[in-house]
Image (cartoon, rainbow, N blue to C red):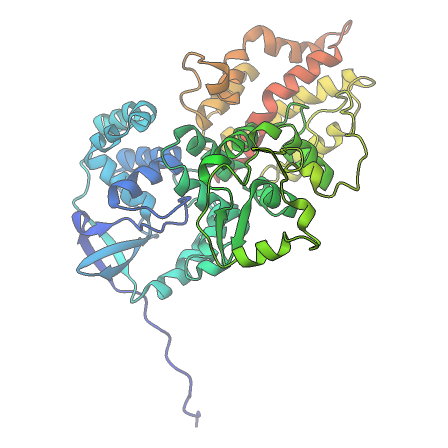
Length: 498
């Protein structure tokens, strides 16, 4: 006779309901956002700003198929008679957009970037948008969180579940306990709030947050950087010691620098800023932008007494306080030269470029492609330029092939068309006319530089039996397409490749 089990029965799944779309709200604390949204309008605009291309990928899929994914129900919780979307905010955004593309016209930049494409998808669709949505209703936010976090572990391009990047995961960890926020997340939150009306800063911040978040982590984790910029961090919150106005110039400069794929030396930022000396030398280039303790009074906090005692005469930290000379602050003392000044070695000279694709991370490509890129990056362009030129063409062909196949696209036989097709998948407006240099993305520049003649140079590297490419030509081509390789890696699809 079997013994009676003392185990509890399996918990039932969340109940499923069909809910009118007008009763469902976006989550104002969505992990994709750099800051909490203040309203439903703000949440919609933040979603389009941070994930606009992914939203349009999904909108295209919805308007073409006229069907939601039956195996992946959105998860909501009830609150004050309404439903809060815990999982499925991008889908809800797309359904709102399908019902009313005019929502994009509230903001000039969103209208310019997305309206015409969204309207074309809606006009070409054989289906009308739904009035209600089948959702799984979780009993609490904590119950929903379990499944939300488990779900975001893989990506399938914009039409599937999108994997959270480092910034989103960081924000998610601090969702229920703000004191667990990292310095990087606190810095992003601070800049988002204090400079909300500075559009150029917000654009640069979003670029860095979405593409080079680890650089924000490495930057603000350096104690010398925090001391120089006056960044106070405590219990998950960061503040400007010298106030937002006086700190804005250096914040703007740093974010605009990091928004570029590479430093002026041609190195990635991770290689450019590695040691403490690297960060010191970098900030010392912008002495005139650094804040001073006279520029703007700040609100006293509980750390003020500690800072005062640290900077009092005879304390070990007294020398790090900017010294006044008459009515001006000695900026040299307020630079990183006054911190860790025992290291007075001159900056390391930047050597001439001799390698391509150094430090390039292509972990979404096949192991063979990764090995080929890594081995090519070890070859000296000046001494082995013919081999590097041949491998450059091989790398471009193999990477564009895998990327386009992973996104379910046909692969042109012509390398020029393959490169342009890959660029347009990532940046649909790349074919638009070139603008000012500082406002034109690397992919758009690469698109317009990809001509039959320029690509033929890589063809000659393989088939010309008399002459090869010069090192400068190889370096130019590698620099042109390195951003594309990085973006293909970041936007790899999930269609199986036969």
